[in-house]
Image (cartoon, rainbow, N blue to C red; front, side, top):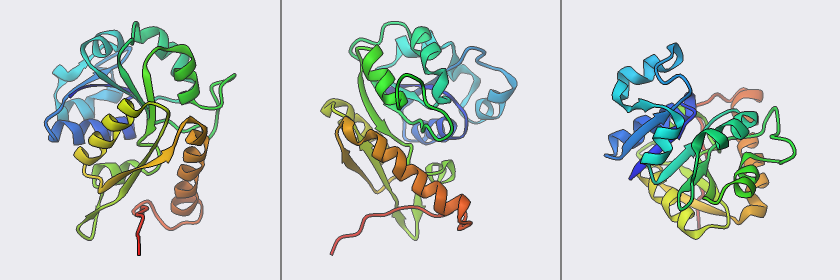
Length: 204
């Protein structure tokens, strides 16, 4: 797949590395493509993968959003026409909401014609860089109304090394999925269990 990543911080950068390794074409879109904060990632995946937001989005069929929530309105403008594209929202509204929307997902669903899915928000970036524990890939989770978008997110989760990508439900479960992410944050950081922990669904 051709994937544009908007927001190449910890999460976006980790996914970029995993998807490049899996053989996907990855472009990183940024206002300042080779600024100091992007140099470390550029040395890993290649400087030629960095371009403007508009250029990255227009060249790709899938767009991953991993920016701070309040940046989404500027990002929507910078992306241009996203008709027919799939957008994956990997953000969490932990400290701020993109008012008047509760989540970035809802802003994207309302203000763009793209097919939107929530995914890759429920664990730390260390677990994205290495999602395997004791020989087993941990689980990823997704939510949204678009079956085509979910199908893509599911495949990209497997390509990144996750053991499964479970459907959390439709768009009414997006906020719940963000709360699930807060559960990981609570255990890993606030309760002090450390960031090298993850969720796996087991069945009897």
